[in-house]
Structures are given as C-alpha cells and as structure tokens.
Length: 218
Image (cartoon, rainbow, N blue to C red; front, side, top):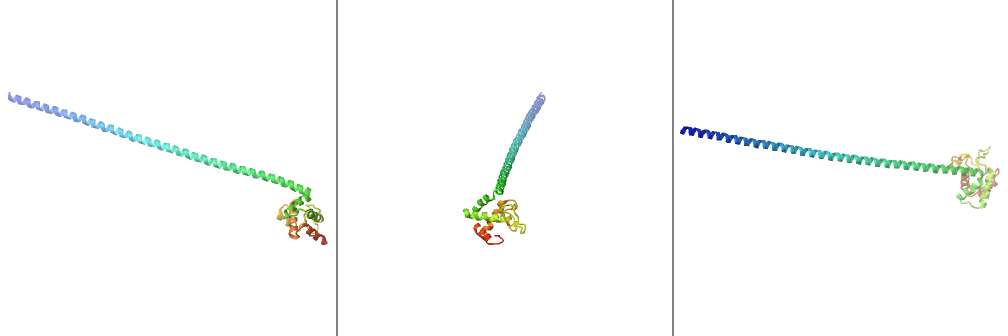
C-alpha cells in the first residue's frame, strides 16, 4: 500500500505543479495581454495627441495665412485708394488750370479788342507802369504816336519797314514783349513805352526830339 500512496502523492504533486504552472502561465499571459493593451492604448493616445497638435498647428497656420492675406488685401486697397485720390487731385488741378487759362485767354482777347478799338486809353493805363500819370506826358505821347502811325496797330512805313503804333524798326524788336507784336497793340505799346523811357526818359522828351528832326523820327 505505501508504494501506491507514494505514487498517488507524487501524481498529486505533479498535477499540482502542473496546475500551478498553468495558473502562473495563465496569469503571466493575462499580464502580458494587459501590458500590450496598455501600450497599444498609449500609442493611440500619443498618436491622437500628435494628430491634435498637428491639426491645431495647421489651423493656426491657416489662421495666420488668412490674417496675412487680409492684411495684404487691406494694404492693396489702401494703396489703390491713395493712387485714386492722387489721380483725382491731379485731374482736379488740371481742370482748374484749364479753367484759369480759358479765363485768362478770354480776358486777353477782350483786352486786345479794347486796345484795338481805343489804343489811347490802353496806352494811358500802361504809362502808369513807368510813373507817367500826368496829362502833360500823356498829351506828348498822343502827339508823338499820332505823327508816327496815327495810332494804327497795323501801320507800316513803306520805305523803312517800321511797323505798329510806335513804328518799331525793325518790327521784330517788339518780340521781347510778345510774339504777337504784329497783331497786338498792347505788345506794341509796351515796347514803345520801354523804348521811350530808355532812349529819352519821357514821352515829352521824345516828342521834343521828334519835332526837332526833319524828317521826323525819334
């Protein structure tokens, strides 16, 4: 009977060991599975965190790009507005200049027409630029240019070629006061008064000299 007991005991021990081993193996297997699951879950969390970070970063970049684009658009609009305002200002200034030129030209035409119709009155106004305001100097000028041209702006001496109200010789001398000297009595008289002042000092001095010469000239 002892050997059987021993054998039974040995078998029980063996079965116990096997069961314990199996139990330990099963426990270790569960632990490994748990560890694998934890690692896998951690990887998922880490991947999700990386993806979230990347997404947030992409969103920030997208927002920054949008802000930059909006800023660039605003700058372009501001530049366009400045350019448009400058163009409008230039157009306004050009229009104002044209209006002034047109008004000046209209006035000029009227003045020339008035001077052609009444050159003596125009001459009296021009004399004040030289300090000659008295009736005496005006009377001398009237007599002088009566004798020279009869106050005709288109008068021309057939022999000498002297031209205009003051009888400039040659006529081109009057161009220093305007290229329109052949048709504008104002230009002619401005030159004539300048010539009288520089050559004789006054209309009466010029008239006196004119009378003293034969044929008359000044």
